[in-house]
Image 1 (cartoon, rainbow, N blue to C red):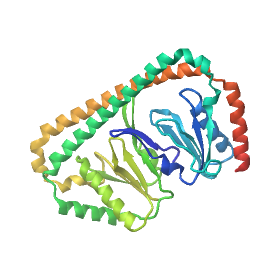
Image 2 (tube, helix red, strand yellow; image 1 turned 60 degrees about the vertical axis):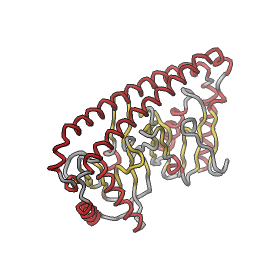
Image 3 (cartoon, rainbow, N blue to C red; image 1 turned 90 degrees about the horizontal axis):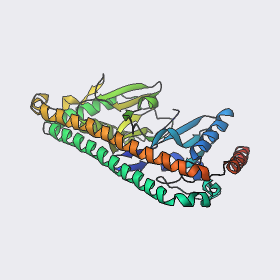
Image 4 (spheres, rainbow, N blue to C red; image 1 turned 90 degrees about the vertical axis):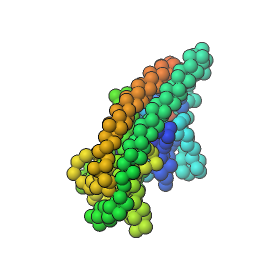
Length: 339
């Protein structure tokens, strides 16, 4: 897979899985403010590796899918990571497991100082926009919980257990190539995006269908527990709408994915659907609220991006990019020479 969402703006706030992504790798931790060139340096790091014939895995920024937060060079097991807030990291063993590359030292404080007031205001605007976005996503999660509660009144546990056994028996239990943890979706200015298909590749897809999220999540959690007991390695994909719940599981030859529709195993058989029909007006109302809250989450996301762009504009004139460029190229030359 070419890219992974290793962090997400979720119903529980900002959640990152970078610990698993960088584990066992030698990591360059980038430091510096907005607009100083961290994402650009990460792209140059990736291109240098790709020009040498190495495979890379790119990690888009959770707040800007077109920007990069990290790149891993698979063949060399090297990582470059934006280690500034909100995902602050340091080397465990400096000089052995990683290095800090401080882009911020090329900033001129004298140029920034007159903008202190506006920068504080913009940072606070951005912070409050994120808080509002998280609240909207939390509302989405609560609406889904209400839908689950309506369905659960008519839940049949025996049918559920039989369904899980049937699904597990159908699986090819060949291990995944690597134990990946990532998010399968993200929120942007134009709304909610599900990118789980990017992780599937040429593997067979098994859809876990149904109109109740609780049942679909429970199926995947049960499958994951069985895989753990058999010590089968698998990929775990989560959703920003409920970041503690598995949204998809990847094995070497097959991926199980939560789905609202499509061919696959239907969890609706675990409920008395004739009784659910009486709650259809309420269910439709909750679905309407979900769409509304997702739209507002996107609106607050855009508010944060506007503030972020203005922050970058303030930092750009204060950067000595010529000096930074020399240091970057020397660093990459030494890094790839050693590895």
